[in-house]
Length: 412
Image 1 (cartoon, rainbow, N blue to C red):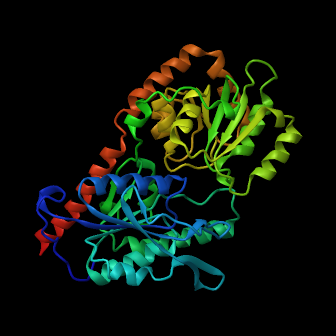
Image 2: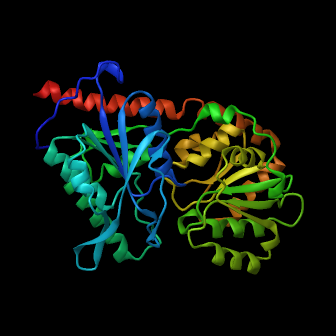
Image 3: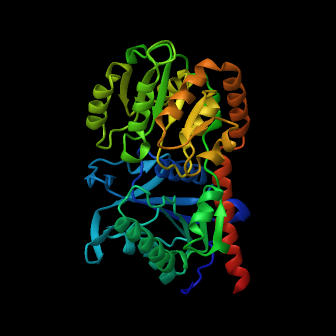
């Protein structure tokens, strides 16, 4: 690992074991919708509340696919200080560049962090954070939130992505003292390029107390139908929404073809999706909500759905599945990534293969046509989600940080 090891600073009463703990979490995007953003925010705010001295360092990007920058950011989120750094592209080899954060290296070096925890994979800030940790002696932890190369990508691009995996394995993950993944599947994939003995599985969660609240019906101004299928997530290319529209069109017009509500931020796909819906004859069956900021409204929309549908090409975990299970909303999802683990191989929700709109249509019809099975799946989902609270996730992160630092002290 190299570098010097800096002891924890004494601060009686702060955190566990009477020691303060300084942690910097580094992520490309922050304080917006998305699985990584939610993970960092929820863990950081709970660690801060428990006495950990924690900050978040993030870029000024709000959408790296379109290189869209934000202009107004909050200096604190949930009591956690947030520092922003301009994102720039750095060329590694010809025709290949990584987004990095200007000024991040100096800021991390001056932070006196005991632990630097970098999030995501194939981004330059992970390499930057690893290099600083090696130089300063801070413990280095990585959460890859890993996404393998899509099979639909050209062979050349898939080869480049695999080369990136190897690069990050050699340049960053060999330095990491812990690599945090969310599922057994992610652990198996990451073992292909990262040290297996450093991988730790810590599932994400939700705020169970929040979901136990009864939010009432969705706001009247949203004009939602009484019964509807619901998609929640970014309108992005990896979310499988074209497949969902095909499935909706395959359901014969009648009581089983419910309207489809789409709730989430547009990542450049809505125009094409609207065109597809018109060509399929289902444009009138769609309701576009965009991003819903108000949490009570959000919960009421999820709770009011006849089924939540997640037709993604890939999901590392799928936090919205936990929300639906906590709300008692039936789930239909593609059997990709970590989804089968979340849904207990189909015992807590209906699973269908990706790329088969007929199978997705049949699963949606079954939610309505087979209420007995639907009720059993919902009951299993409520049991499953009961152990997945953000407080437990945060506790396990702090335990991991302290364990890494204790191992260092014992090895000195």
